[in-house]
Image (tube, rainbow over all chains, first blue to last red; front, side, top):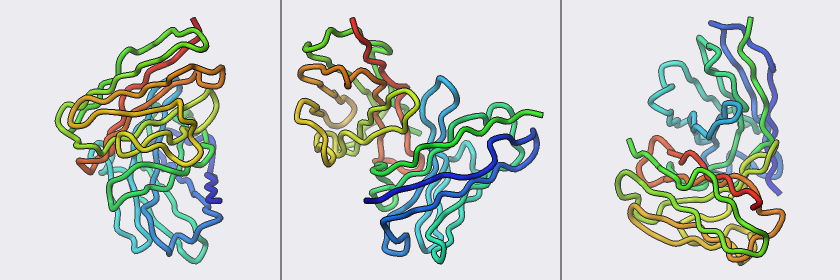
Length: 120
Length: 108
């Protein structure tokens, strides 16, 4: 059973960098699939942030590309998100998920999500 | 960039009745469309991929249809656990993965 778990600070100050990690269990990232981040502002819909392959190949949402970095650590079986210069508009529940596709696809396994609030 | 539009925003249905949810793409996405269910406080759950293939463990009362720009998710007989928000997502033109705005299915 594939399981994903997000971790990171729940509160980030404006203009700083949001950093989250997604630990994967039940499947080796090195075995394949893309892995992605999706966010959901409170009471709103879903927004794809970006995806990464175990080789390090990445795809980012053009609307966030200038501020986003996604990286992978296969030795720890985890991948990470960094979002720079955050504002209140970046307040959201952040989900990590496995993407079934190459590189486009659907998200078949999801983490429980973590709420990140941007506030001073 | 493809825009996904879902309708209606809210659907009021009685338990046991049929629910029909629509998703429209601004340009053709072939059959590269997925549907998700999200309950309050939970992560989305994959229901349908390839426009009509049920994901593992999804009950047969959920069915998807359509191709190109028009898609439908049908819940044949609503159960209490089906009241939730449903999202469609295209993965034909990548990036980005585009989600629809969601349809909330509520108890009538």
